[in-house]
Structures are given as C-alpha cells and as structure tokens.
Image 1 (tube, protein in one colour):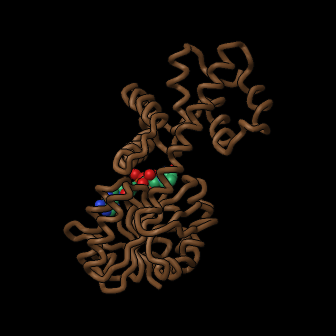
Image 2: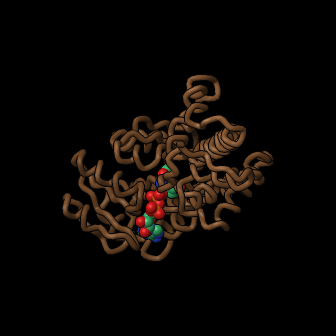
Image 3: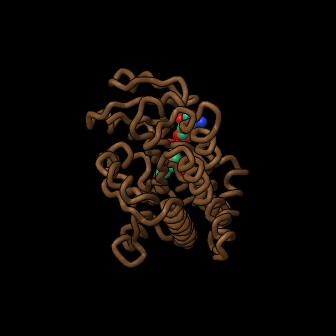
Length: 294
Ligand code: NAD
C-alpha cells in the first residue's frame, strides 16, 4: 500500500517516519518544509499535492487549520485534482467539524472517501507512535486504514460520521485549556500565599485534583521551560473552532470564552509561540509572582 503524506511539521514529520519504519511506501509533500530527511529514509518527494494523490492508495494530511486542508485537498493542484476513484483521504489535522464535512462532500463527488481523524498526544506521542486518534466517517474506510492508524497511535476510535472526529477533538481541547488554566490559577495562589509550588505539586498530584495535564505541565512551569510542544497560537485556533461550533449548535461554552481572552492577552504580550503551559504567565502577571522551583 502506498501512502501519501502531506504536511511535514512538528507532528507530520515523525508520523511519516513511523510509517516508513513500518515498511509502508511513502510519497511526501510539504509546501514550505524540506523533505530531504524523509527521502533519505526511502520516501519519494512529490511536487504537488495532486501528484501525491496520483501515486497513493491513501493520503494523510497533517496541516495547521481548516483553510489549509480545504486548499490542499480541494484547491488548484490539490489532492482531488490527482485523485482516483476509491482513494481514501485521512485528514489528521485539528480543524472545524463543518470544514471537514464540506471537504468530505467535495471528495465524495469525485468518488473519494474522506475521514477526519485528529489526534491527541502532541509531539512526544507522535514520535513514539502512541497518539490517541479519533475518527469520523465511513466504517469500511476506517477498517481499511486501521492498520496504519495503529502504527501512528496507541488507539484509533471510530466516533461517528465525518466531522465527529473533530467534534471530539474540540471537546478534548476545551478540557485541556480549562485544566491548564485551573492548575495555573491554583499554583499562582499557593505561591503568592507563601507555599513552595514544588511541595504543592507533591502534595496534591495523587489526589482528586491530580491530572495528566498537571503531571505534564507543572514540571515545565516549575522549570520556566515553555518551549513548544503545543503552541498557544494553535490552542487559540482550536478554541476559536470550539466557540464557532458551539454557537452553531447552540451550546454556550462560557468557561472556554473566558480562557480564550486569557490566550488572546498572552498572544498580545508576545507569548503565542510558547507552549500552552505558558498560560500560567497570564495568572503570574495578574498576581505579580512566578511559579518556579526555588
Ligand atoms: P506545523 O505548523 O508544525 O506543521 C504544519 C505543516 O503543514 C507545515 O510544515 C507547513 O509547511 C505545511 N503546510 C501548510 N499548508 C500546506 C499545503 N497547502 N500543502 C502542503 N503542506 C502545507 O503544525 P503541527 O504542530 O504539526 O500541527 C499540525 C496539526 O496537528 C494542527 O492542526 C494541530 O492543531 C494538530 N495537533 C498538533 C499537536 C502538537 O502538539 N503540535 C498535537 C495534537 C494535534
């Protein structure tokens, strides 16, 4: 089976490497990033996204947001321009559910099946091949691509029709943002009140307040290490998609709206390219204290 891979950024590049290591034939393309390291590992570089589709049985896309996926799949020299009937496109980017449905419709008109399959886990799990993958779309196509999703992830779950993969991903991002904000607010409070934040972490991480987010992000906060990871700018993109989708379906999400404004403030302060653990800096500025290892 030949797999086309479009979008070789922080996530896509290690994912493509894992597929090569699992002995799949890969045809790769990225509009801006180099492909040499993947070619050195045995992949073939294609000039356009249409050329990727011409050579592939399955095309995976891993791009920043909805406009990039719309353009890469339905735009000029895009995947659909080179697609043959029966091609399966698996978009693993985090995009708006409505955009996934529109692209799926355009694909169906050409006999192409489109699955939306965003991931959770970030760069470390992309490298380890242990992502959590949530898939929306046709069950038979899901079964066809399941073996390669199992190379990329520890789990691949069919969650409903096309678009629902991204609905689940938005739910994930709402929870992660609120969790980091709550951890940040609490650690700023404890630090300002005079308790060593490292001791706070040791005392509460095993209790009900403990979480995967706390375990992943508090060590970064204590070290003042905000290298991404998952950039605040990308989390703003996800929360904007969450707010838009929530308003479309009539589900107000006030907590997310509040955190969105904190993220906007961080972006204005020049922190948009930092890891989202830097949400703590918003609360640190409010209180005039830093949550760091002493
Ligand atoms: P990235 O910006 O590092 O990579 C995106 C790549 O797409 C870039 O190399 C860019 O050159 C390429 N690209 C853009 N438009 C293109 C086009 N038309 N044709 C071909 N290539 C094009 O982003 P990333 O961090 O790898 O994230 C990708 C997606 O995965 C995003 O939707 C993000 O929200 C999601 N995600 C990221 C993480 C993370 O921790 N970084 C975790 C989970 C999900």
